[in-house]
Length: 103
Picture 1 (tube, helix red, strand yellow):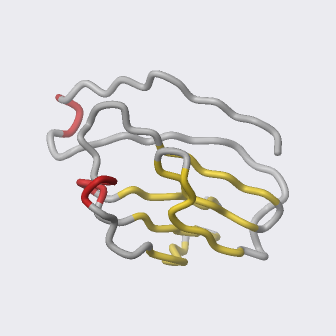
Picture 2 (spheres, rainbow, N blue to C red):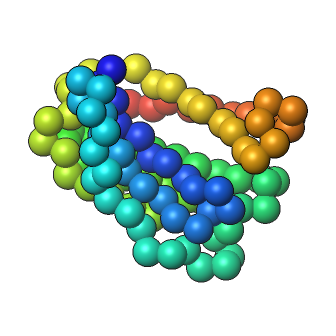
C-alpha cells in the first residue's frame, strides 16, 4: 500500500500527515496543539485535504492547519475516507458531503 493521509486525532487536539510507502509508515508532520475552538464537538465537523503537485495540506473548517512537501507522492491515485471513534462501529457516523475537485 502507498498513500498519504491527514489524520485528525481524537478530540481534535492534533492533525498529522502520514505517508505510507510499500507498507512503511512515515510520520511526516504534526500540527501544534489546536485551540479549544478547533476541538471537534462531533457535529458539523469540516475536514479537508488538498493535494497539488507534491504539496499536501490538511484543512479544518476550511483553514490550512498543516502542510508538507512530499516529492515522492504519486502523480495520481484514489480517494479514501475512514471514520471511527472510541465506541467503534456502534456509534452512528453521518457523512453529509464529500467532494473531489480538480485543482
